[in-house]
Length: 221
Ligand SMILES: C[S@@+](CC[C@H](N)C(=O)[O-])C[C@H]1O[C@@H](n2cnc3c(N)ncnc32)[C@H](O)[C@@H]1O
Image 1 (cartoon, rainbow, N blue to C red):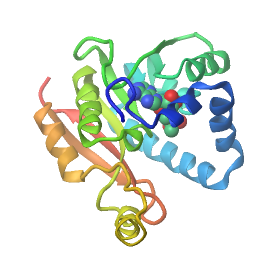
Image 2: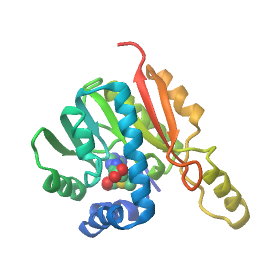
Image 3: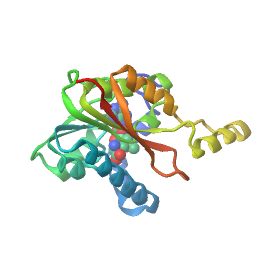
């Protein structure tokens, strides 16, 4: 069972919260080819998205993990806030990146302990597809839109991606577990409800990945 306080599989959460799991996630991005490729592509898209936005005062990166994107984001703001559900990830990140122009705290992205419109840009990479219900995935998006003053950059796993369509076949044929997906149209509609417009939504890769990176900008100040 998953709920607000345990929104992904408990074994996955325990893994991210353990020193071994956090170090292993960090090492994957150094050692595994597919991780290096997706990291490069995500960085290229992030740079392009920030080119649209320009430099800002504050960015919240939630979940920050071990700080994979920390340096790239810090170059684009005066103050970077790094937050994650896992204490271990936050500690590792702070140890590696320091506190100059950066703050750290532990939080769930489903109930962010910040006021409405308190941060210029909220970035949330690679969390949505871990959240086990549609309700939680939508709640996550609503929280990002609530806290962001100007823009949200977020990833989700697209229901209409080739990777998910193939998975749906395997769900039917061999009883595989379904992916935690969102429909792109539903994400756009939710953004509109929260006062945001989708500016860009690019797939990480068309083949081999179902992740989409979206840039949403607040429509009215
Ligand atoms: C796949 S990692 C992504 C980390 C980072 N965004 C990146 O792209 O490298 C998922 C992260 O989500 C964190 N996490 C899991 N559930 C969370 C929640 N409800 N709120 C905030 N962070 C959460 C985990 O601790 C882990 O660091």
